Length: 339
Picture 1 (cartoon, rainbow, N blue to C red):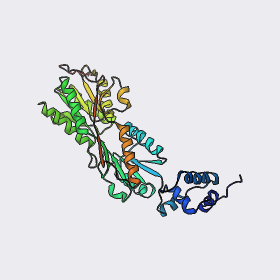
Picture 2: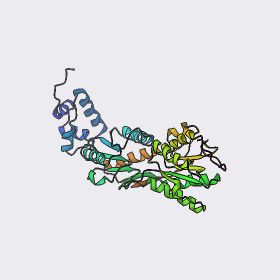
Picture 3: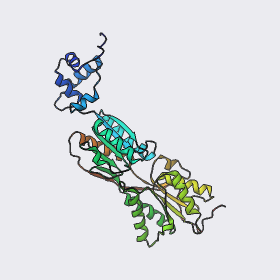
Picture 4: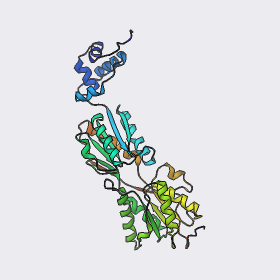
């Protein structure tokens, strides 16, 4: 076969495949009504001629990009990694590409990414947004994980907070602290976890004074600082519920540095059940979110929206589950902190 021309046009592909330009365009843009045989013939002609789709022309023509965008604070967060694993498997099976944009949790950067993806992507998956950016997307379909919007995927965080409290109460703890997550206007997860945790304690007649609640910001460093402050109180807690596994790992580090044995002197419960929870020493008792399943559901919902199909559910909420490992045990009378 001779070398393809330097610039291959839609007409060249149509001539090679023996079909019309409109048929080639319809196949490229995944329009309905094309038989499998026609699609295969056109795709073979594209491969053999070396035709490259002009993305800008496709947008101007009103065609689909076959691209889904993701906006997330960071891709190296275990929570995000698990979600992306589930979403990418669905997107790849659908023959689409996934473009991931990070924001470093900056609302201004998030808005810039949103503005860009509004013209580039057929739909957008918004993971733990820093702000309410839905108005930026216009008609572009958006599905949000751990945030608000017309289409959302989440876990029952109030239930998760209750499960954490109930587990520690069942072991006999009554002096229980909470390392809360990041509180933002566009997210409800940290608030809901704390609300469920407080409700279960109140139902059991156990007080949660303000000095036993510290901000951890969902980070390992934040969790370590919060736990140090709690463990050096005149009456330190015998148990800590951290709003995610990263801050719980930070609490483990603080306990180790202060000579507090886990779980003999201090019980710790995390949230998420990412891989580091089972690898920690001691292995972390935590509240499991089905993160991969959440990513899959979000991607399937987004695919429906991009195809003009109304999803069966606008809001999917998965149940939380308690995973008991080695970081929790009945309390001792005193927590001894090394000088």
